Structures are given as structure tokens and as C-alpha cells.
Length: 249
Image 1 (cartoon, one colour):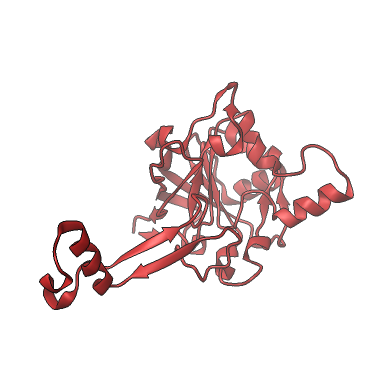
Image 2: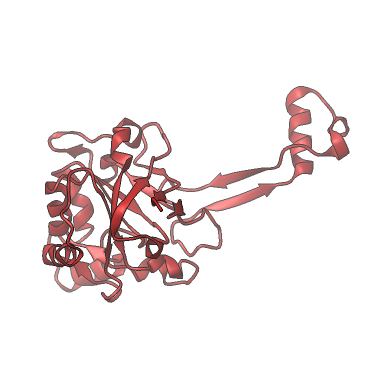
């Protein structure tokens, strides 16, 4: 089993704000005493369960985006939230497309995907979980973490969906190109279809994307299973996942 998740870590250089407060065993005893009408001294050495209090968005850490994240409707119907999606989507055969040769900010095209699959001698099948490797996770503690990944174009995203792919992911901070690339492009020539274009494909076709994967360099190109079950947040636009690859030896 290969852990392909980034940690929920306050030191990770993610522009989305989150915080973790670590609660000691001594604090645990004080809390339990208040809840159950006891005294902290009633617990061994005045200690009880340690805990953590977190404040974070559902898009922090390794997470699965639901169709609701992209737009209120998908395929002409109300978009489904993360708790409404079929579990079968999130456990399937994995495919890693290695684009570590592309520079930060590069936008992958349909041709890039086709060429890579031809080199791998692999043909996508419905419900494969396709993951883009650019090794951005290796720099998740650097200030520019959110700006160094390879993005996927709207056309390439649409092409994957047409191949029957329901779940696709990246070890980058986001599925589209880094936002500063999109913003500079738009400001130089304001026009539709530039900002978050791949995300907005979800208006036309229902799909999920996994962002902030890790350790894809430890996986073969295909021939393994992937588990990316999202946390069940009622009405959520995303859910955290402990993404795991299962490789048969």
C-alpha cells in the first residue's frame, strides 16, 4: 500500500487557510471532567484523551472535488454534492500519466494525453482513476507550492470524461494551471474560457477531481488499484480523502 496523500499540516504552504490546535492529555482530562461531572484528578495522573481542533476548508489537503464545486448544475440537473456520489467511483484501477518533463504552469492538451498513453501502450477504460504526475508534492513546504504544477486544459478534461473517466487527479495544488498563469492570461486578453476552464467543464459533464495527491513517483504507470473515498460532508463541495494505492507484488 502506498500513501498518495499529503498531510493536514499547518506547515504545508497552502494558500487556503487552516489551523490545528493540539490539545494535550491534561486538557483532555479537564474537558472530560466538565462533560461528566468529574474532577481532572479522577483520571490517572490527571490525564485523559488527547485531541485536535481543526479549522479548515474542505479543499485543504488531499481532497475530492464534487460536481457541486464547479457549478450549481451539471448536465442540466442540480449538481451532486460529495455525499451523493456513488462509492464505486472511488475505488478502481489507477493510471499515472507522468508529465514531470513539462515546465511549471504548462497546460496539458488532448494530444499530450494521447501521446503519453501510446508510449505506455495503455488504453483507458471507463472508471479508471487517472492521475497526473508532475511531482509538485515534492515542494509542498516551499512558498511557491501552489504555483508550480502542470495543469490540464478544458479540452483534455472533456476528453477524459468522454473516455468514461469519472475521477481524475493531480499531485499539483490544482487541476487547472496555477491561478497566476490564468490571471495573467486573462488580464492580457480578457475573454471567456480562461479562468478555471477545466473546472467549468463540470457544468457540461459530471466528474470529480482529486487535488494535492502525493508520491505518484512510487507507482507503476498502471496495474494497481486506487482508493480515494471522500469524507461524507453533507451538502459538501468536496471531501478530504486518505488516498491510497494498492500495488500487487
